Length: 397
Image 1 (cartoon, rainbow, N blue to C red):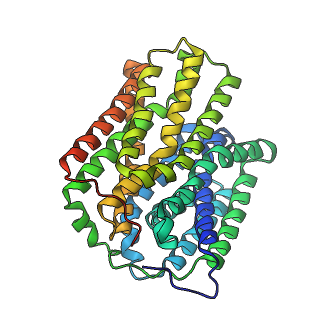
Image 2 (image 1 turned 135 degrees about the horizontal axis):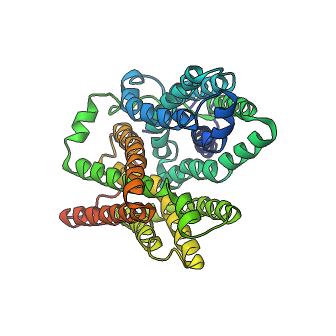
Image 3 (image 1 turned 135 degrees about the vertical axis):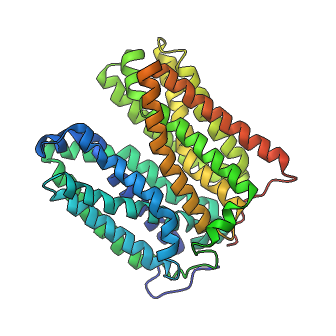
């Protein structure tokens, strides 16, 4: 279905860019607490463990609300839905900025979780609708907001927090959210709900064998990623002997490598979504395993972390494109399944990694995470050989 014209609609590429900026605002807000936790905990007289709920709660709520978005937004114009979600993001940031205790803080972050689950269910599927003839490129531009938020947004927020305080950071984020809301309202065309947009279609999609294989792949690769990535800093400091300056540089390099992977994603997926995802899983899994064996070799450590970063940058777009190929007429239902399972897997992976680190050490967490990444590639490869021919993601939706 082609986007309907509207007097407020701008060029399709400007519309795509606006959704990508929305993704940037969401990702930046979601991970801002990582660099601000000590400040928040100190000012509100909380433990850092309690303050860590600022990260945990949005992920859990996003996993729950992603499929529910298909229910409450079933008949609404997607332009209106995205603007409402970004307005909710603005409310989230403002609530956090003026929070006086744990409960008001978590209320603000709960608003964020709803916005994240809804945005990725709807916004993550709009590339093919806004630019049908260049669907892969459009989706890559939208997902570039994730990488830019990780590479630039979060470090900038941390730096601003050190200079002016964490409340100012969330106040600025609220202002950015308002600007993005207005930008989306101005640039997006009318985007009526599609036929496969209701909650009931989830059951139909889940009954497909290939969808169940897709869910297994999502669970294994995201659990593996966050079982290892959550404890990358302890590995670099305690096992590889990196200084704090080197640690910051390597983590920044990881994010920059992820941005490169994201840029390559549009080209690679246009060739083959299946083989791109297999390559992504191996680019993530093999370096994790090798890192557990080369901790004493600094150049090798840096190299493998950068390769891992490229794979991680490819992951969201490669995985979603592969899933979309399974049900090109039910993009929002598949998007909800992806968002929900990925968000839940992030929490499970971080928890599993913590248990492994506590009982077996950080090297074991890397090995387990890498093994799950490689197994993901094997599962997808087996699924590919069972199919008579590869199902390519068709942009005609």
